[in-house]
Image 1: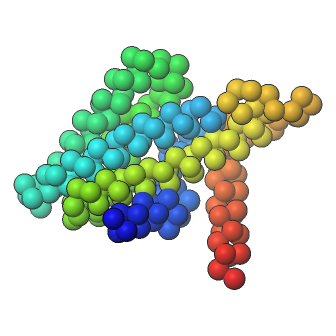
Image 2 (image 1 turned 90 degrees about the vertical axis):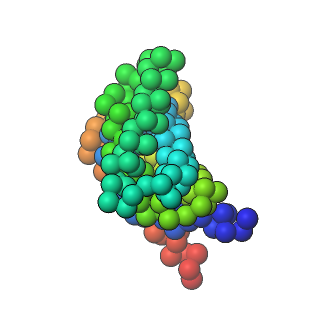
Length: 198
């Protein structure tokens, strides 16, 4: 059980896919203009990540080494399609906001990378724990970035005005603001890490 907690903790902090490993940034930077979009993308990512890890691990003994990557993509594609259909049917506004980035989960290098590097070589429970840890790390990074961009770029959080006379900097809801926001998050994380290590 302790080993499972280590896998979860590693995904959140030590191997955070967005802020430490800096992979899968395309969707993070593109959809994080608001907290609502960030939460939606984070939950979609989590569903695909956890269930893909689960099934890759279940099928690992039956998966020929030479064709493992196409099999991983079929597994990931199956869960991405489920997410895509559910969001389009029940959350049309979110579906419209996230656009092409939901189907692109199928080729997200975080999910494919974890399938290859972890789930294919570990037990089902360990793979689920890894998927949960990586997903929590992804969610907190994208939601923090979404909060920074929404607040500084629109003056709101979850579409609610925070300060009456606040003048937002519209650049934060534009592409350059995504890079500034992620840079700010990484800088804060490095600063906190340096204080902890002292």
